[in-house]
Image (cartoon, rainbow, N blue to C red; front, side):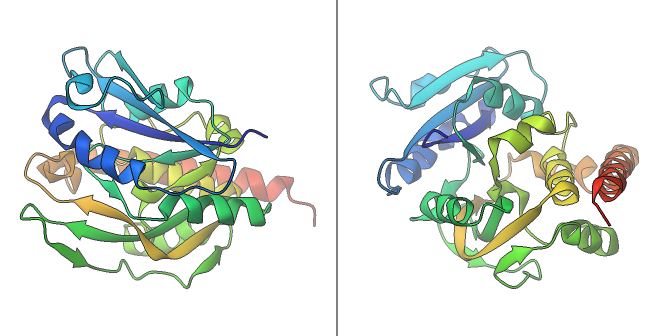
Length: 252
């Protein structure tokens, strides 16, 4: 197995200005000996110009563009260009906390039965201040297979934040990357992972989640209406189908 962790980042024109902060958080990461990271940035459209905000002399940064398809299609296109054994998501307007990548790598290296990780999140407000919050976080450690779906089905929201996912490459490729939805594709991936494999919750904060006016999640369609109903219905049906398939394949 190689010792590269791939960071996949979709970016659209409104969020390009935040890339330097995301890059600074990556540069600050201290990885285990022998490990390195690559940053696969996917421009959602051909007029994004991410390179204008980033250095041109860092070979770890790999930028490409594709036709507009939304953030989750862009993430999957970034996955197609990545090479790491582990795949870590990082939105262009968010920042990793110190040690985030090392903690992900340590869990996956030391627990071969675990296929994905998530961590706690702190909101980063527009004035630069931070607000700590909990989603009703689970206990640190192993997240049993199907536990994330059980919580989501009851509360209609994930118990852990899908923006913090780190996944073994073979599993995210098996699932085809992120769901090709206008929103909630990361929740769809989280629940699909949960249906097939156990995860791990890291109690330390791993992500500063930026809150700002231009983010896609501020759209009224994100939390209600016909589009929301369709997204939730497909996410639910897919997770249930994968869970049923996994149960049939599990020996008694």
